[in-house]
Image (cartoon, rainbow, N blue to C red):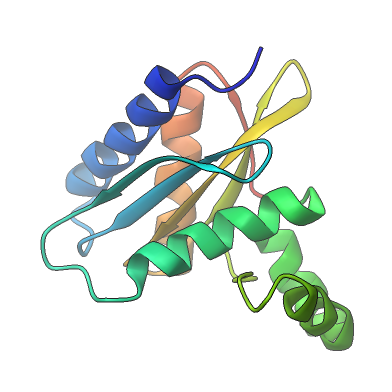
Length: 141
């Protein structure tokens, strides 16, 4: 079963709820389906101009390479030319830093969450909590 709109919206809303509980800076959350299309995007008041693109870039990188963006971040440190080449192929749309988390159901990728606005570790923690709260599996890499 694919990621539904209701699931995508619920995950995005839960990300912001968890961010409030953690007292984080204003966040932007993007939820993409397995083909990389935007299903839901929420921006808290006070987020900066490029946050929607950053959130989508984190999620898009995870979907494109089948790895959570933390794994992409580590790979970028070890093989910078590979990640740079993948980003070039993607038209510069990949953001290989933590905060892009794959969403899985029964071991199959059904989407990804990209989240930005606080530290990458906090961004990722919100995404993981929200995905798991939806009864799905989070893969941050």
